[in-house]
Image (tube, rainbow, N blue to C red; front, top):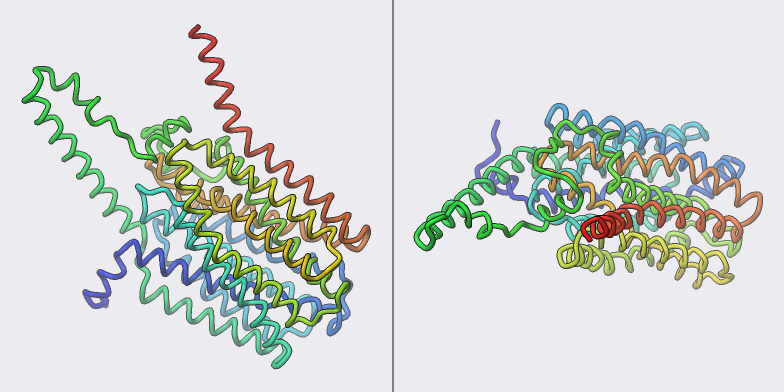
Length: 472
């Protein structure tokens, strides 16, 4: 049964896909963050689990993310569908909420987090992929930033809502909220989302026809002015778009054939390595903070789950204001100065993240610690927004397929970070304390991020100078 004509038109608009994906991002993060504030109380007071085991909870989410992120990109590109993975993710959120509702033991919390990781990796990969699908000729920084805005609205509200639900209704209340949100996401997808690959095909065909018509008009005009139109037409229409010039700077041509490119082949491109490392570091440090920072607030200031949730609320509010600006500046910088500016912005984000971690590490007051976390949230987006948009811009510049696999690479990096870093951070926190853990782990990761990201633009500078020397 086909939907009404007016709904078909609404579903076929790129703006509808963009806004629906933003709402889905909000629901995804809301479900994920419902349990952040109550985890220390649930595990330590109710279940009497050692604090070092808190890292296992976050690692379980990462394992689920690796499973979902490692498969959904290939399946989606292979079978040319976005809707089925999106509906699968919404259904898994309902299952996760059901598991949490009946959770009485530690292993049940672990199972809940694994399912949540699978659902989140599928949902996030698809929402970024669908937006990149329907904007094939646009830079994606600002659009990705808007997705992160809604993501952080969920990050802002989730801990507070989860903390209050846990204090008033216990584990069952959070489980019910998660199930209701999963059902709401499923209905949203069924009503407003069309397969974004169909929209992409229509848009790319329209762009190709428009370009062909423009080229034909130029040839006709030139043929009336000069006798050799063929020799001048190329110059007259040589006004490449940002994405085309981006492809040239990367060494990517139209004939590269990205349609058959798989995750491991995409990762071998140096221009993708840096953004992948940046996402690993930024999201990994975020997971570390989500795991250890509530413990720090609980141990140092004896705060309740609801008050801990307020800290995340404050940070989320700051991010909502800052992220669209970050995305707009990224697109503006790449448009005006070239692709290398993306990598310099990511490097700046890594250095600023390190500075914010130092503030959090040495702080002895609640207000200073929350301020440091707020600064970390903004600076991490300076790294994540250009890094995340790099995958979509890479595929669009190559004029090929593999979009879902490119964005699944981002989730593989995030899933690996969630598996590896939180247990390490929890162990270090128990062994050497908050300050040493933050300075050592944060310093090493941010330095590695800056080095990996700068490798691509510095290689370009070296090649340019070498070619200049050869020419001379």
